[in-house]
Structures are given as structure tokens and as C-alpha cells.
Length: 113
Image 1 (cartoon, rainbow, N blue to C red):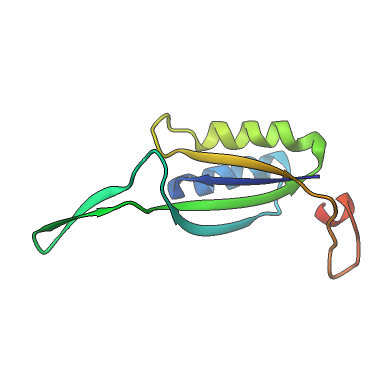
Image 2: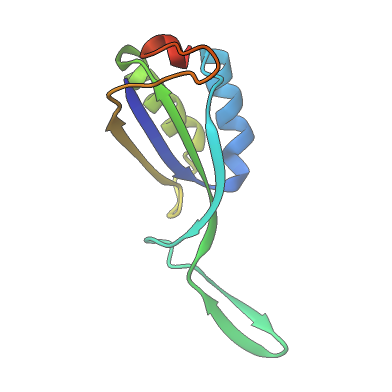
């Protein structure tokens, strides 16, 4: 199993969820986060003074999938979240050694289905 963690623009959340849902991926964890990278934030004016805000709001989505789904899920997220501009985000993958569904005690891939 592989954990896919991606950080992308908040405006793309519904599109990514819908695309993954069509593929059959429904279980995910979504968090609102702030961060910086190549985008380097933005400037805002407050009471006539310009401020540099280098932490930009993003969405972090985490999903655990069987190994055989990884390439397709990465492809879906990449294509749907892409705008072609700096700040589109990143995707990270991590190996998962086990999973347990607390309610039933199911383990491994059975726990993530």
C-alpha cells in the first residue's frame, strides 16, 4: 500500500475529489494548510501599508491506495490539479506497512477498501 499526500490550490479540491470518486477512490483525509514554495506568497495592503504574506493557503489531501492504483491516482491528481502556473502544488508518496480498520479489525488492503 502507498500513502499519497498532495498539496494543491484550494479551488481544485472539488474537481480532484470528483475525479478520484469516478475512479472509485472515496476515502481520503483533507486539511486546510498554509505554506510557501516557489510561489513566494503575495502582498496585501492594510491601512495604506503594504505587507508581504509568504504563507499561502493550500489544501493537503491524503489517501492510501493499493500499489496497483498508485500510478493512475497520481495521474488523476496531477492532471486535475494542474493550472500550469507556479503554486500548483506537490505530490508525495510513502510506503504503508499496514492499516487497521478500528471498527472491524480488518487489516491491510481490506482496511482501506
